[in-house]
Image (tube, rainbow, N blue to C red; front, top):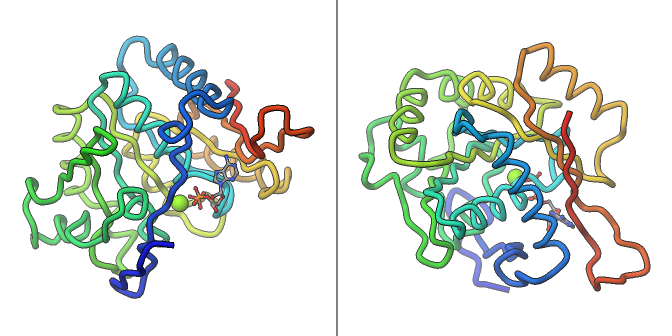
Length: 238
Ligand SMILES: Nc1ncnc2c1ncn2[C@@H]1O[C@H](COP(=O)(O)OP(=O)(O)O)[C@@H](O)[C@H]1O
Ligand SMILES: [Mg+2]
């Protein structure tokens, strides 16, 4: 286990779940490739640039999924930036083995400039933005004009801006974010969310006119272990 680095009392140890990078020939990595192809089709005219990833509850695999997608898209030559907008439970810093220092909240409060905000990972070949100093003014941030301006600026430089966001049930953060995104990919952890709650979450998104691009089933058990993995991803359209 990597050495713990305490910053704002949060967990910063490295998060090793980039299966597409570590095991590119695995069944799981292959499932990701399929999602990617579907996303390319859904986005044939390039209208969906800012894509949000959310789910019903916490721990359904959003951060893991969006990180793998970002890595694969970057690997295909797309210009990618991955932004951690889960200001309550940030995780992307751990994927990139860094802290949340000098991130979004610091940029929005003018403590750092754009150049300092945008980080590049040589390891993954993509850019990313961490959350920054912890704040309780989360809704103000997600609704701010400055965040919209930032996304518009990013649109000029990237093919995709992928947003890791909180789940739909319990807090409204995901709904605020959905107003500034082009579409949402909804993650369902097979063993995490109950069907009724998933339905409720999807209905909440729909009644807020959110453009659901697709639904991804994660944490799927592959019984009999034919591929030697305990998990998989699958993808379906609405
Ligand atoms: N496809 C998967 N199969 C099995 N476990 C997974 C998968 N994706 C994520 N996990 C595990 O589920 C937990 C939550 O994942 P995370 O990506 O942090 O979820 P979220 O961002 O939705 O809270 C982590 O412990 C992670 O290792
Ligand atoms: Mg997360």
